[in-house]
Image (tube, rainbow, N blue to C red):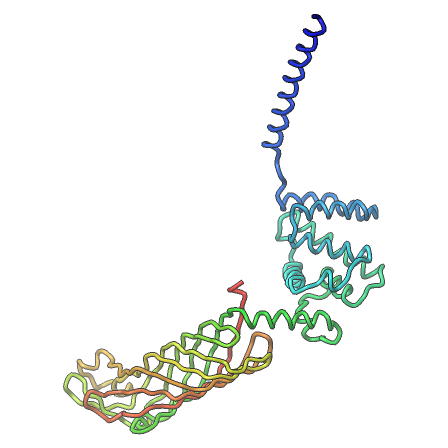
Length: 371
């Protein structure tokens, strides 16, 4: 009987103890904190430099593994892993380098000159990584790719991408990756910003106005074959000949001229290669010019001149476009098109006719706003 009571008592105590321990474990699990990546970076900068100084590479490797479990893809972690692989002679181009690494090195080089403006852990990271890279350059026999990475991380190379583009033979693997990166970018949506200067050449009775120079702005987007732009152009200089316009029932003549075009332009590139584009284009919009008395006749005044009259027309145009890329982003373009327009002077001079326009374009494509 005593044995039975002892067993029952033992089971009750065990049950209570287990419940308490279970409850305690759940409470710990529910209330324990998980360090964020910023905290992990701070911890890493407390631990890694000491391990490196002690040459405890196994411990350093384990610490980086733990960091990777929580913050895989963190830029500071990726750079640390690269340095560690170079230190342990594990670095291989195919395994460790891709297009994202080039972006990583470019970002590092851009921010490295002024690390003091960052919070303490990032400041410590830049000092640690640059010192490590310098020691590798000084004490190790490195391959060309490893030297390049260490020169970037030590601050010796301030613009990695430009260095690769200017010396493709020195960095053939990196150069191939840059080309592949730009090839992918050309297939993505890109913004287009451009300035233009050109000439507007009228036909038919519109030749009364004469040839006019123009300048303009284009803002739009494109991918490999398609481009859509909002185009704004201005034309200036006086008319080649006086022309008459009926205003408020009265005819008056002038040689004043200030015109322009605003519209949507679409281009389809039949050929889109690394260095050039060639294709067809079409556009539509509003075309017009302002009429006012000769600005030199200040003594002349009449109320109907108090507001400028704009002579306008719908513009439908077709043409050809060619772009030549002087770098991966910047290009010089040549555009020629025929503009179908129909001006009316409300009973004044006959200005029927269309116009040719030829424009030299200086522009840039970029995909950074679409990433």
